[in-house]
Image 1 (tube, rainbow, N blue to C red):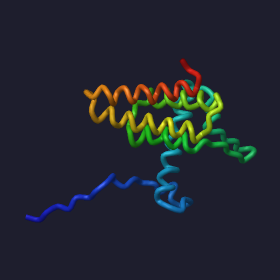
Image 2: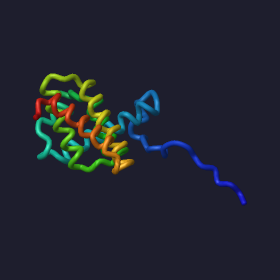
Image 3: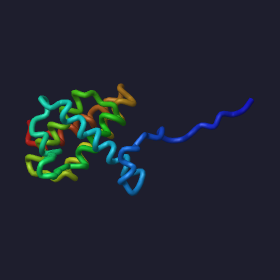
Length: 149
């Protein structure tokens, strides 16, 4: 009987759209996640206020303003972590509030990453109260950044 060779790690993702202009596979994947985050904005247009703070495109003036790090984390929440649409919209609104309060894109990106990691741990072991508290604390931190009580 032949032994089936198992591959290690995550399955390879199709990033053919972004691979052309990215110098590395990692950067191509980051852009792919960012565009997934961008896709979330118009889909939930009525639920996400002030979304132009994250992505503003003007075809007439041929300009684009983008907060790539925040959008990438939102895209990872959708694709990698498979968080619910409602949760992603809520976190996008918290991120926008934090940007409006004066926090940098990098600071908000780090807060979103903390939420992603805490959510991943919490979803692995639903019975572990400590993981659930870590997730609540991470969300509260982003909420406080945006001045939301």
